Every structure is written in structure tokens, then in C-alpha cells.
Length: 87
Image (cartoon, rainbow, N blue to C red; front, side, top):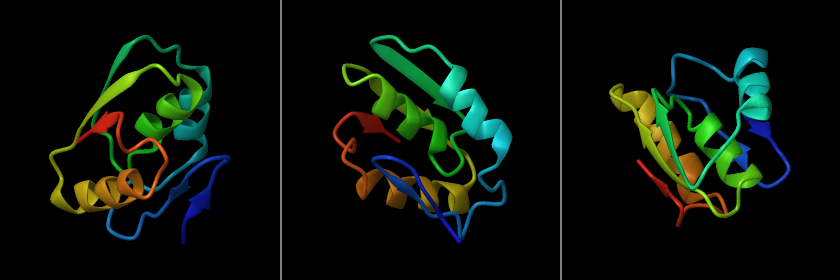
């Protein structure tokens, strides 16, 4: 089961940590800058939310779990922000 936001969709089949209220709230409250670092990106939710909210930002997203990285990669590649997010 995935989640669809305004400009992107999140698939979470492989990631152990599913999208929840806390992640969505954090993404809506966080302030951005020109360069953003998302440590432990999981599905890529926060990286994608930051890219959507801050169109001039470049995001580096880091994930050590291989399964979560699969979801983050898929979600990022299918988004309109894939040129501004590095995994």
C-alpha cells in the first residue's frame, strides 16, 4: 500500500518503517535551505517533501538499510524531483 501526495507517490513495500503521521508532520514543519540532508531517509518521504516544498533545494538522502533504499530509489526516480535528490 502506498501514499499519494500532491506531486509524488510513496511505495513502501520493502521498507520496515512505514509512512506515518509523525513523518508527514515533520515534513510539513521542517524548514529548508539550499542544501538539505536527510539521514535515514527510509522511503524517501522527507527528501521528497522537502523537494516539493523548496523548489531551489538540493537534497542528499542517506539510508543504510538495503530494502529501504530500494523503496527510496524507486520513489525518487518516479518523482518530478529526481534531478535534485541524491541517494
